[in-house]
Every structure is written in C-alpha cells, then in structure tokens.
Length: 301
Image 1 (cartoon, rainbow, N blue to C red):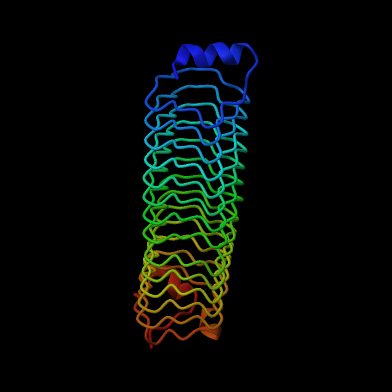
Image 2: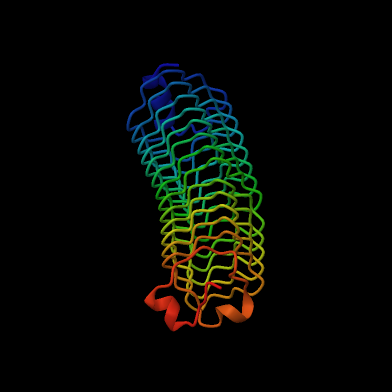
C-alpha cells in the first residue's frame, strides 16, 4: 500500500489497518495515534520519530524496522516480531510487550518505564542505558544482552534469564533477585542497595565496586566472585558462601556474617565488623593486618 493512500484513509477517520503490508516503506515522523496494525507487515520500514501512541501491533512483523525515537507509550505489541529492530531512544512507557521477540534489537536509551515484557525474548539485545523502572520482566530472556547503565529499580525479575548479561553500572536498588541465577554476570559498579539476593547464585560474578548497602545476601553463593571495593555496609551475608572470593578493600561495616564461609577468601584491606571473630572462621582467609583490622581485634592465627 502506498503511504499517501494509508494517510488519506487515516485522515478520513479509519483506524483499522489489520494485516496491512507496509514492508520497507518510509513512514518517518508519521502520526498514527490509536490505529490497529495487528498482523501488519512492517519489515524493514522506517518509522523513526513516528507518533504511534496507543497503537496496536499485536503479532506484527517489525523485523529490522527502524523505530528509533518513536513515541509508542501505551502501545500493545504482544507477540510481535521485533528481531534486530532499532528502538534506540524510543518512548514506550506503560506499553504492553508480552511474548515479544526482540533478540538482537537495539534499545539504547529507550524508555520502557512500567512496561510489560513478560516472557519477552531480548537475547543479545543492546539495552545500554535503557529505562526499565517498574517494568515487568517476569520470565524474560536477557541472555547475553547489554544492560550497562540500565535502570531497573522496582522491576519484576522473577524467572528472568541473565546468563552472560552485562549489568555494569546498572541501577537495581531494592529489586527482588532472590534465588535468581546470576553466575558470571557483570555487575561491576552496579547499585544494589537494599536489593534482595537471598540464596541467589553469583558464582564468579563481577561485583567489584558495586554499592550494596543493606542488601540481603543470606545463603547466596558468591564462590569465586569479584567483590573488590564493594560496599556491603549493613548487608546480611548470613550463611553466604564466599570461598575463593576477592573482597579486597571491601567495606563490610555492620554487616551480618554469621555462618559465612570464607575459605581462601581474599580480605586484604577489607573493613570487617567488630564482632567478626564471634561469628565466622577466618583461619583459612587471606588478609593483611591494616590499621582498621587491628582496631577490630582481628587475628590471622
């Protein structure tokens, strides 16, 4: 269909364009508010800076479509195919994207605050700097995705797959990641203040210089994790597994460490709570006596 014909029909009040074929068309900056484009073929189309507020794109084909900086708040894209689509800078606040296919998609700087992405496939996507605050990512696939600097505070992450994901510098304050598998994940410089990581799997994870004040890490498995320079003030690490972890220069002031396992854990320069000797076994840990450790009465013997 020609773009001019489509726009003429829209201007005449028509909003139902179910199944329309717009493959490869140029719709830059177009205004199509509240239209129904379900099952439409928009593969390779250019919709950059388009106004698609409350548009319905259920089951639509948007493979490699350019939606950069498009305004799509409150849109419905359930079951749509956005594989390798470009949504950089797109505005999708409160949009519905359940079961959407977005593997390899570009969402750099996109705003999906309070969006629904249940069971969405974002595998290997570039989500650097994305805003996902309050978004529902239950069951979503984020394997090998780049979420560096992403904002995920108050996001729902139950059952989300994080294998190989990059969360460097991401904001995850207060999120619930209890029992989530995060083995090997890059969380360097991430903000996890008040986060719930109870029984989380973080073997080999990179948490260097992360902010984790008052985080809940009881029974978490941090074997071999990099925790250099991490801030764990008032964190709960009861019964956590920290064998072979690196806690060099970490701050554990007022942290709860009852039952924590520190076999071959590197504690050089770490600040530990004053009651540390009453609760944990340090005999196999690796650390050097510093002024702070000496004031706490620590002993290497």
